[in-house]
Amino acid sequence: MKKIFFSVIVVVFLSACVQSTKSNDNNYPQAQEQSAKPVILHDLVTLDDAEKILGEPAHLSDSSTKREESALTYHCAYKANAEDTKSKKTGAIYFLFEEYDQVSAAQKKYTFIKTANQNHGIKTLDDVGEEAYFHSDRENFYFIMVRKGNKVFNMKVNKITSTTSLDEFNRIARKITDNL
Image (cartoon, rainbow, N blue to C red; front, side, top):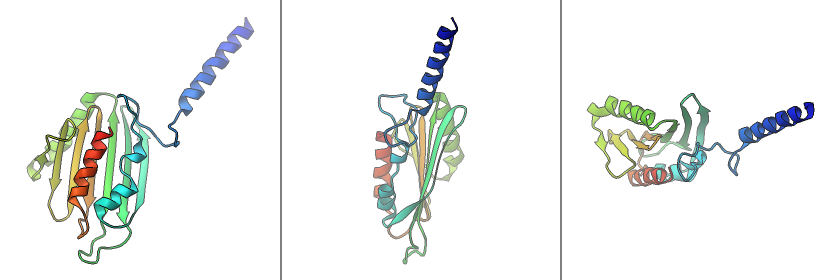
């Protein structure tokens, strides 16, 4: 009887260890799979993407992942390697991805942020995700927020320079949305 009990305990313990150490092939964080395809977080916005948007060489300046009670959050930031000689600004891109356990929580977060910016000249986008809007002062920043199912992301270019590409910003935002 002791052997059977001990064997059951070992099997339960080992299966729990296997479950807690599962990761994707690259050992990078991965969003929980709520759809047919997993979201590989570090692939959402790459250095190549950032350099296309900024129009110049850049580097990863920050990256973090955390799991809270009801959401997985991934944040990364890229900064241009040098100041733009024409604008005298150093461009940066900030990206935030959140995957909620419930679609209603993602809808609540999206609505809260959109409502806070409603009176600042936002443009609702009907062809990106399930809900999306764009916001810019056309001089200092581009901002987009997208909700698709239980996932929400926002991407912001801070300090628009002479080499920043709005076309690439929009293309990459759509690429990210397609990969969710």
